[in-house]
Length: 246
Image (cartoon, rainbow, N blue to C red; front, side, top):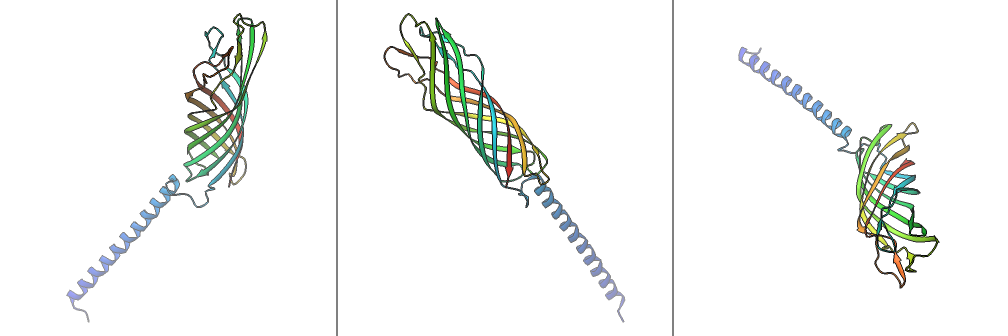
């Protein structure tokens, strides 16, 4: 038979055990809730996140070149549209953060008049942007994103066609530009899932580029003049494509 003091001790120990177990359960539930919230926020990568991404794009590009006449007057180029195409490869570190690299081709076309000559310029570029991507959620049916990073441009060819009467100085117009440039690419877009598991997406958005290097290459031959003014390249584009998550 238990004495009164022993019964009090037993009740005290039982009460402490009950409180301890209750607190332990609350801590476990709170910890589980925190883990769920962190995973949902993308701080921890989701288990079923597809980390790889590949896409193809059609990219109409608007650009304008500052041009130079035979008498060294600067001619403000008018905006023109060219057809661009590209591919992208991305790596998603979480539902909200990733990297992507692209290779995009486009051709700049510009017409201008220099005295009695009509000139048509064509410059072809390969653009290689390396971008950081921030997303609302790569796992949702609808995802908004913003991107930014450096872009490297490679000049893969340029030409000029002139028609009309030669200028009084009998100088030949040429296109002399540097083989490459570098600048900052930036943009925003939206993705719409086209299938049930959200692995195929319609991708559309805006892409801008601000060049940090002058296009002009000063060396030209005798009796020639460079029609490219000393200025950097600036473009604005929209894109429409399909991306695949894997």
